[in-house]
Amino acid sequence: MSLITDLHIHSRFSRACSRSLDLPHIEAWCQLKGIDLVSTSDFTHPTWFKELNEQLEEVDTGVYRVREEFRDQASDVIVPPSCQRDVRFLCSTEISLIYKRHDRVRKVHLIVLAPDLETVAKINIELDKRGNVKSDGRPILGLDSEELLKILLDISPDIQLIPAHIWTPWFAIFGSQSGFDSVEECFGDLSDHICALETGLSSDPLMNWRLSDLDKYVLVSSSDAHSLGKLGREATVFDTECTYPAVLDALRNDHSKVAGTIEFFPEEGKYHADGLRAEKLRLEPDETLACDGISPKTGKKITVGVLHRVNKLADRKMGTRPDTARDFWHIIPLIEIVSEIVGMGVASKRVQSRYFSLLEKLGSEFYILKDAPIADISAADELVGEAIRRMRESKVIIQPGYDGEFGVIKLFFPEELKNYGGQGALF
View (cartoon, rainbow, N blue to C red):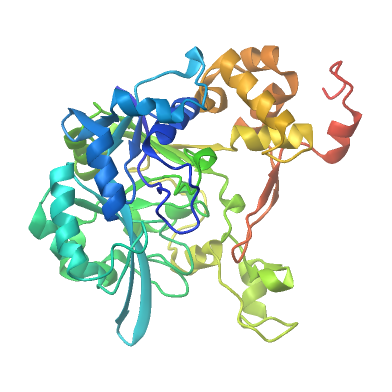
């Protein structure tokens, strides 16, 4: 059974997140996107945890669905028949740790997977003793990463911890500003309990394959969505049954059951390149080294991005594919493709109308982006068909992201769209 999963998202109780991120709306949008299994998110937050218990019912071991009586709360979202599917929820959340180790402040984000809501209740009791879990859906705790892992394993050996967006400069296990140089350095004697790593938006498997030390970990991807439209911007595909034990076994034991990951083009991630956003200064790693990491304009310290950090730790050349590697697929969110073609923002009525028309005619977003025949897409929308053909062939135009500024990925040169008259002139 093939499952498209997004196991790292947020609720409306996380800082800077949409108020629409409730369970019925998440379920509806997962149908539009083509997501089978999604994170409950933010389960340490008391009010959200109460909603999880009220609004979810267990349908198989460790997976839940929204109770029928709550689905009307998302009646404003029309899910066409072509997109309708059973969406399941798995207990997971993100935790932010800030602590001091070896005379350095460390800031690490970690994903926690739990086997059921009963286990989540035990986790919340223990974490509430050690910090404020009420102020934010993604709590900030002063625990060491190894200490948190020990607490979780003492609660249940079936809890799995996964380092989140592992290369992000400010809050990640390998981050240039506050991270470590290896999994072992971060988790010490408990490092053997780490089996998976999340690539994050600014890196992809190709970049991670450059480190032989990472070969033993399975790579996963998730959206880290802060709004409904961002769900599934990255995802992981499993060849398993839709249960918690099956997903856990794929992560821990049989990596062949992880079919692969659906990824951003990493240059679109907002920390891919080096630079300083305030100065509109974007640099390649060799340029940063040439100026000793200091802005030639102002003398400020340059934010070292993901590509630079990978280069520093890598022991292989780009293009190496280890025997343990899983497949991956680069995508551009469909709404962004339509926005480029229309020449208007993603929230505009014209873009939204064209986007939902494609879903109604063809099916879910992941089917359109990844699997639908180009001829079928072109029959529904000629320009979108050509755009997705280019995307699948990685024929993209890139301005890399840096220092918190998202990159720009285009599929057409401006003159192509300007000259297109609707009669095939583009081709």
